[in-house]
Length: 208
Length: 208
DNA sequence: CCATAACTCAATCATTTGATTGATTCTCAC
DNA sequence: GTGAGAATCAATCAAATGATTGAGTTATGG
Picture 1 (cartoon, protein in one colour):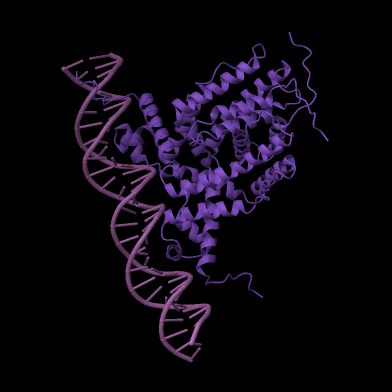
Picture 2 (cartoon, rainbow over the protein chains, first blue to last red):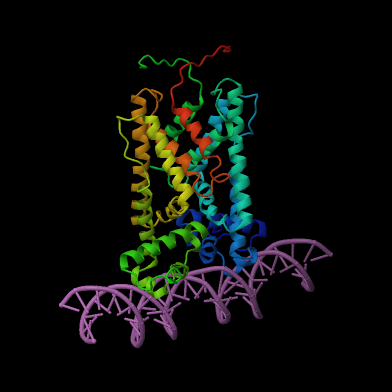
């Protein structure tokens, strides 16, 4: 035995890069992007700094790698693409459930996005990666909300894209240590859902 | 004349600290917290590094100063405190308008909060400053929404605090260079408002 | 088995960066 | 005016940090 205590010393480039990205992602989520040091990343992976630089040219390249792999990892957690043929409310709930689970099981992902956003100001590549992701993600919500409106489940006067920005924006607020962790996640979602749905019997009997 | 080209060389401690905080705030908003250098702050203020350290003990103290002054500056921009005696919808709109204007006129403030959030993990003082602010800010929305419910303007089944988190979360998403700047700000608010308000005539005539 | 490529590391560099020291200049109460 | 305190700066330090060099070590195709 004694092979579980000794990870393989030699690892293929692709796999090593993934290990490096994962370590960097966690460190960013833990201590913040401002405190990210290439040395710390190497140490967490269990390799020498020069080995890290062999696999990832520079710190900027490392951040690009983190952005791309985080985006891919996050997208892989999403449910099937929106469809007009399925119940929109169920699709919305599945979408939100997937996001909730990602916050619970892989909090580094969403936190990384928040941290990397500050690089978007100066790094065009990261900006593109992030914007593509954000647009695509909100786009899924917009599609579902549009289907729900057409299905008569959601308000007829709902504007899908702004409503999608509202929903994703509200939920994104839970990424960086949400108010009381995830305790308020579902109550907040309940408000989103109630706000979108058609209400059938609502009377104003005390109007002056 | 020629007094507009030569700022006073000697400035009182309080004022200098405010100048330093303002410069740091802008730099954080521009290049991100990760790229903040005490040298750059001093340069922007137009003073020597040692002068900066004379006024602000350390970089950590600088960040604490930035957090506190940003909180104060932001709170000073808010409308009068919520009241059950005034129209809740008008109060909500005033609150959102104030936030919108702060994003437009002093974007450093909201951006700084986002950047400083990453320090909350390790710095308890900054964490407290930020959390106090967030709780208080969302609390205003919760109060207004509660009043609106009691006034019959908002849904009877609205849960004020989660709804407030939904609203502030959705609007906060515009702080770090929102999707297309502030272009989508009011459409998103429209969705929030519609979601909160009571709807009077909504029929389901195609139910199966 | 061997040679080549792929991977790893110890040692080191050149800058950057937060911070200090001690001298200098300005302000203001008296 | 003048002296004491407040504010400023040039010069410098020590540590941190991104990156490189060149010499090992391991895997793999032939």
